[in-house]
Length: 55
Image 1 (cartoon, rainbow, N blue to C red):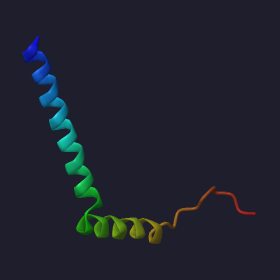
Image 2 (image 1 turned 45 degrees about the vertical axis):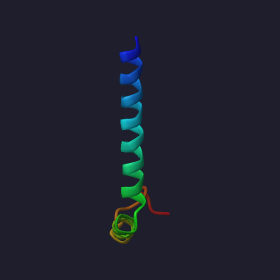
Image 3 (image 1 turned 30 degrees about the vertical axis):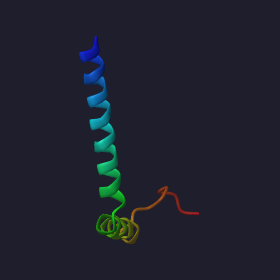
């Protein structure tokens, strides 16, 4: 049973490290600037009609 608990602990730690790595990547300065640019492009390129009906 001790081996099973060790394996669970290792998998949990690996999952935590992956989560922290993704957060650092997503909220890092380089990525944040790139994501902000992409978000602004989506807003600037929005030329589709919202409902199709004109009042």
